[in-house]
Image 1 (cartoon, helix red, strand yellow):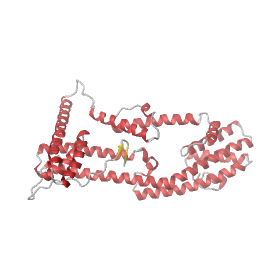
Image 2 (cartoon, rainbow, N blue to C red):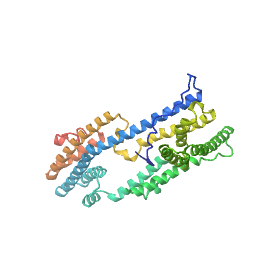
Image 3 (cartoon, helix red, strand yellow):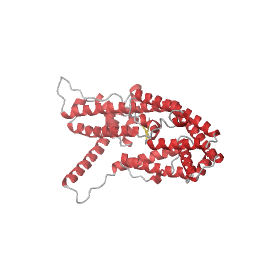
Image 4 (cartoon, rainbow, N blue to C red):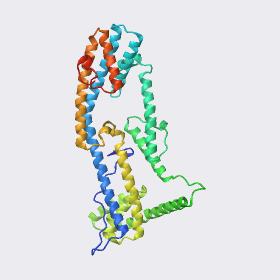
Length: 393
């Protein structure tokens, strides 16, 4: 599953749970450990289900909506060109021509949001616009980079400039380099916390010291868990070929987690293997549970942030307006939009055909007037009824 920085982590499987024997009561730390592991399991499932839902909606949109959007875009250009030809056959005042030009530009802009113009269509737009198509695209790209950079900085606590996005294109290699660069910066932003100023309060200093002590403890735990797992899982100590192969596979995962400083992954492997074979979860000391709980809390926070990132992933932009609905409701909304697009497509074609052959100055001006009125009132349902008795434009 895709993320801003590559792939979503797959759910780790069945969650861990401390169960004590002889119906003894769980300590507070044991209860908290169980709640956190269950919460992590639930959020992982939620995130996976969310990404799957959005992927299905995206597939439906690409199959049912996108082709219609392309058809509507071409019809808008057909209508715009029909208006342009009308100005060649009918004499209009400068003011009237300016109003017609505004409608032409609007139709072209709407169309170009869905399709790339041909050289002929681009030249037609440039004829009616004070700003060329290429300049418009450049300006929109600069705005998009600024918005995206702000989103990255706010969502991930990073510091990137819009210019850093200049070299990104649609090639997988370019996107892979970008993801790797952003992931590296993200990790750095998490590690390089802003230093406390000299006039910080005693509480702030104590909190910073506690945070540093916790980081030191986590680092020690990382190495300690790795060494413990290496001792238990070393394949050379095993004679049975099946068990040896199993240990080799798990040891690979342990080594990768250690090299990536992935303490949650190491904790998971430790709990799945070491405590399965040498001691029970209920025998974990409060000190070890405290380390686990600290890491699990951070994992919960990151998974909650992942949910936001899934919603905001550029891949799902076409279905963003449907994303927060249930899947069935989102599908009903898309079917409704599909029906409306079919109506718009029919109306556009009817209007373009009429304006293509008309010699009536009044008919063209009535159309432009009705269009502008509908835009001002933001009520397009009666847009062409005055002239064509048609539905929404």
